[in-house]
Image (cartoon, rainbow, N blue to C red):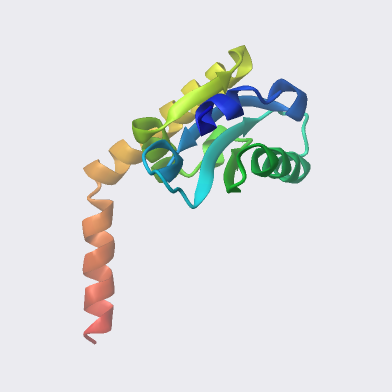
Length: 135
């Protein structure tokens, strides 16, 4: 049984999780170092407690360290990480609330990425750093 199948057997709802994305080396490497997860936590669940429980269960099931990024508020999500996880990962668990949270997160991240492109944010930041370094 592979790692993804082992993780699909976890009682995610019982852990207060609405959606789980597995990404990183566990999907493509024969010898992954860890299990990278993005988890959307239910609104009434304590995030820190949930992450500790999830890490313990994942590590017990697959024998690898769990690297968990928890999302409880779509407006505060790390858009770069979410984008990469969705681009290269697999959703292994979702409920209706999780799908709604993911859609809201994607909307926030799309607006964020679009603003960065339109405002040339990266180029402007690099230019400012280079100018201040040369003074």
